[in-house]
Length: 400
Ligand code: ADP
Image (spheres, rainbow, N blue to C red):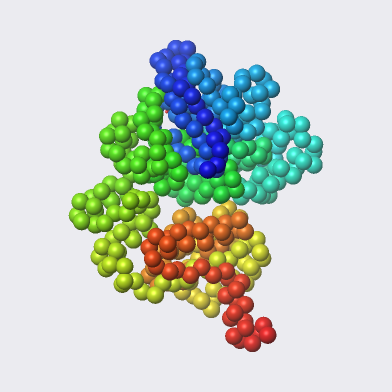
């Protein structure tokens, strides 16, 4: 099991004019986890988040980073703020410079990087968040989602281990929210520990590896999401609501449906429960194939022509770079969020799909589909598009 990156030991905090905001809280986060801190307004989420990088110092108790107590002298604080990046709820409060480049360059410049290194890390960070080419743009001209990405790039440019997001989707429209949550997944896939605060249970439930329910400065429950949100008493105590998928699965259980021990976290899980109940597991059509195109391997150029001769195939793009590549090549996308599950759902109806994604995410497609096949006993084939094309060419005698 990976090691503990952040820890709170019985921390308490009271604002100068106010009641105790954090009342004896302990938890730890492991490296690579996705954590959701969930609670109503005033629960203490923001206060707690600000303790993660030393912005707030607990009155009693202790915060630890990498098993070392956080220290509050200037040098130590600079160090911890490099390791734990903080993305504020409102990007207008985080973005300070007149151009995107200058803003993202602010952190690395302060760290003493030379000009070349600054250019390098800024370019990488902007590419990562899907804003390559935005360097000279004044931030005030950007959309809410783009500003959020600039703020994230500014934090990424310091290459932190942990990224903390206060209410990450606040102010974003549904599609902007989906894109942002996918970016968080990408960052996590690249090894970052991600912590979000939110009062949105529907957002936290399917996304998090672990949820911490917080109310009135105390932890009400901390567990995997289906357990943390699965107990109505705890959910009520935290002034939250039970996620729809959990509520629905509880109702189905009362009607004799078999609910697996791991409760449904997605529409795909729910469809599986219902189909098994209605048809048993034997009645699926022959599943379709999920094809994967690695945009980093230069396979994308073949896709438009290939789609023309396979008009029934719908396409999804996973990850910032894949979506940008699809836009450049004018490939119509049916799915841009929850892409793997949606392709599995289509495969279960016997249809083939194509996922555009980047190098590092190809493995994730295989892992998710394998996990589904293992759980369901249904075999869905995943094929790399270049292999499909090679074998088609061979059949036509084009590739002897
Ligand atoms: P949340 O982020 O969950 O909405 P906060 O951490 O902002 O909760 O607030 C926790 C408690 O601390 C609330 O009772 C809030 O009124 C109080 N509080 C927050 N900020 C301040 C402040 N600057 N001064 C006094 N009290 C504050």
